[in-house]
Image (cartoon, rainbow, N blue to C red; front, top):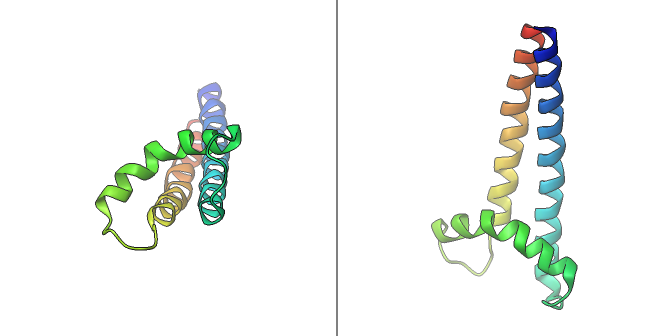
Length: 97
């Protein structure tokens, strides 16, 4: 059973790293929206392709204002997952191991 616990611990750590990296991708995308970058730049296209599937549904549900609050909502969701999901996985891994 300790193998499953170690595996779950590794999954928890991986999920934490992925959520942290995605949070920074969202932050970079929000900062780039202030400077109007070249839309054909490969980095800008990558950031748009990675973040738009998450931001678009939230943007549709929020009221239409001059300021786009969808990155803030996504970042808060990421923090929630880091504070709730990751510790639950870690505790479960320690109980199994």
